Image (cartoon, rainbow, N blue to C red):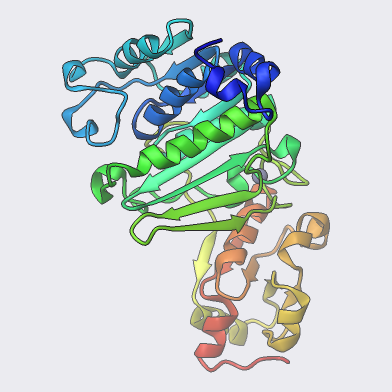
Length: 368
Ligand SMILES: [Zn+2]
């Protein structure tokens, strides 16, 4: 009790909250930069069991930010380094250590009985996998990501309301599109801050204190000392947590391996190509997925208005035996619509790159 006395006097936690922490089990994906401060603070606060998954060895280039590890463990497994430090911090801590990757084959077993999953991974396929695992297990996921001088943190818990990671990022970025920390760099203290935020959210979720950061993305710009808060909403088109989900298992293209990325499998054309096509054939099936107000201001002649959010419920209106073109304002929403239509089984779907903005910029006419 002496060990926890500074926090058990807080009425928001109290002895009952401390009991919940002691009885809790948290799955920590990675003990690198974020995982260092996450596991140190969770162990120190009295979380009873930490399940730690990390296949890597400690490298000297880690030590600038991965404060769990020291010089004496260079070349040795991170989980061994973590175990020694965390057991010294709290000898009563129960550790389940796994020197392996978090994969679709072990994800359900490793997350069994866990109260919270904390994602300290550094790649997209693991983030998709932790998201899907948390979703199917109905366990809150405390997410953070860092790069250069910036970090973001949120809690995904669709079973409690709010979005999942796939609502935020429907598609895996193409290989090389987002540089890794090794390529882009990351400043030393940043993961300490973002990992501490993750640890704090985890303690709150377990003990039932305060309001978890569900539906709230906290963005930290360390260079200018700015914290921004973005509201996140669940995407009704989300392939995992949306109204018509098409992902029913943690085994899916995005979670397969670290190096294979699910590429978009719809086609794309420019507004010039679309204009050419429309002048050649009279019946191009073009869907405008913008909102009615946008369509009323400017539209492409003959386009059919089906706002993105209504696409799942209006799927049966769309012919399956024709080439389907989709456009929006600038190309973002329409690429999501195109992917949704492909996932829904339509064979020929083409996104109009640049959307209405590009159409008008090229001087093509508006029907309105
Ligand atoms: Zn979702």
